[in-house]
Image (tube, rainbow, N blue to C red; front, side, top):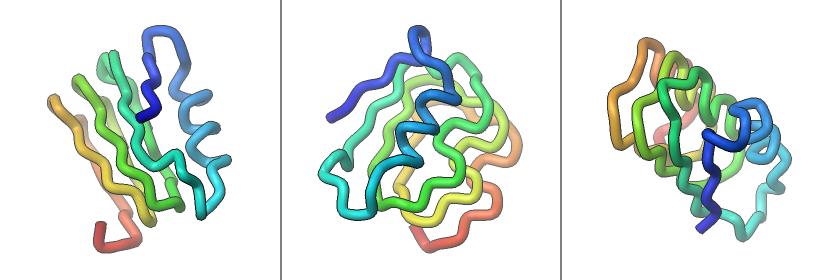
Amino acid sequence: MIEVDLGRETVRALNARLHQLPRDTNERAWRILNARGAHSIAAGLTVPVEITIEGHVGYYCGGMNKAAAITVHGHCGTGVGENMMSET
C-alpha cells in the first residue's frame, strides 16, 4: 500500500502522481493521511485503484472519477463524487 501524507505533500502533487499511473499499474492500493479538509482530492481518476482517505475532505473529492474506488473515513464537503462516469 502506498501512503501519502498531505501534511507533507500537496494535493496537486498527489493528483499528478495518480494521473500518471498506467492503466495496468500494480500500485493499486493507496492510503491518504491528513486530508484536513483539502479540496479535489483524487479527482479525475481513470485507472482502477483503491484509495482510502483518512480524515475529512473538502469539495469535489473523487469528482469526475472513471474507475477508482474511493473510501473516505471522515466528513465530505459538497460535490463529493460529482460527475462520476462509472459504476464504482
